Image (tube, rainbow, N blue to C red; front, side, top):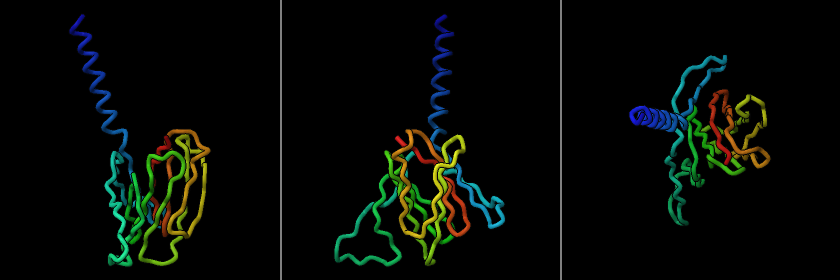
Length: 159
């Protein structure tokens, strides 16, 4: 009886460990203009390391260098464009920052719940665009962000 109990405990721990190891993993896809998937990358969302150092007055700052503080965010490079989504997890407001060498970016943001229901569709040419999740319940959401015809998908967690 004790041996069987230990087997169940060990099996439960193994399942728990596997679930924890893969629960924060998502996939990022890049598509060409015709809609064909050109690449897939595994993105691990457990902790993102992003420089949040602000430059003091008088410091020389490269014009192409970002000084926007981003706490708990993830970044993705799409061509010459860097897209950063922060904070994630969030309690309500997500910001999407787009940094590009090319002027006049058009960013298209689609937000879906896990059932596939469209919650938001927004076009923006701003450097920072806000996604308001204050009226949504706690849980996971999928953001599809299109910059210059290239697509990335993000998992957003609302606490």
